[in-house]
Amino acid sequence: MTVFPDDQWQEAAPAAVGLDGKRLAAAVRALVRITGPQGSSQCAIVRDGRLVWHGPDVDCMHGVWSCTKSILSLAVGLLVEDGRCTVQTRAADIHPPLERHYPTMTLRHLLTFTSGYRPRAASRDAPALEPAEPLFAPGTRFHYSWDPYLLALLATKLAGEPLDELFRRRIADPIGLDGASWQWGRLGTFDALTGLRGVPVCGGSGLWDCGLAITARAMARLGWLVACDGLWNGRRVIDSHWLREATSPQTSPALPPHDAAAWYRPLPGRYGYYWWTNGPDTAGRRLWPSATERTCAIQGNQDNYCFVIPEWRMVVVRLGTDGGISNTRYDEFFAALREAVAL
Image (cartoon, rainbow, N blue to C red; front, side):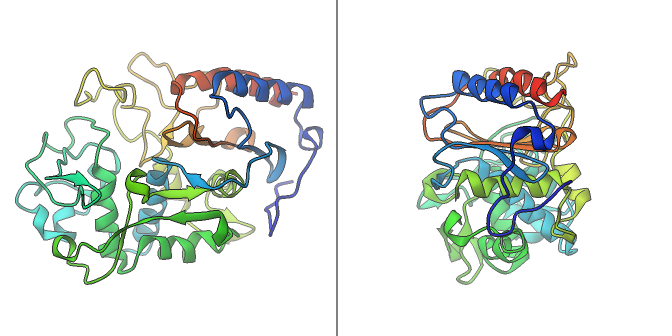
């Protein structure tokens, strides 16, 4: 039976939720082998809403870099649900300074890293909010870059309030995220660029200490919300249609990367709305072949992950500050975890 945590997670032995305990332990050992020196210390594994394994440091809070993008995606989903925009809304209709160089750019282009957006500057004092001439025509290439910072500005203008406050009221509080377990940093107001009249803009990603900071235990709640299609103990928190779109591939695997040698070149066909997905490449190979088709992930630098595996009714969080690994190496973990599930 699926449950939801109140103040604390219910804990359960693996066998009580249909997992093989020895094989689950082997999966954790596989995770330790492929990750950095912090291993599984900030790891939390949830099955059917119960915590079945966790490391000793799951209450350590720190920045999780690009994981912020997935939280921004959830915030945009709330605005779509409220009727304030659609993914086809032109960015320039929200922020007129974009009209000159980006008349056809939409929110969808930004959500999928296909906008061609190039900022005039990208620093703590000028955080990628002022547009310069585009790198390419929207929709023609994939470029993992500054798009989330611009989208955070647009979403703030639509919301009329800081995104961390929107997120706290609509998502964090309803699912029991303790305010001491997460924080979404603010870049500042930048009124001359934004026209927001004192409303601060949160970071769209993790640079300049203005992204999401969170604990593994808290991140698991977000993962479980997504695993349950946006329902939390009978309450609709976020639209299920948005979650399905956000966590499904939203670009063709044939879409060329802006830089053919860049690390992000395998992402077309495997990326949703700021969520990593288990979609196929042009050869039909999934990012994590041993995982399920609907597996998706919140992902950030320094090997920060929250994997949502709906078919297995599981969430796996691994946070850290110990450097990154190749994303494909997680298939070794999924191969071992699949053995624990296959009773």
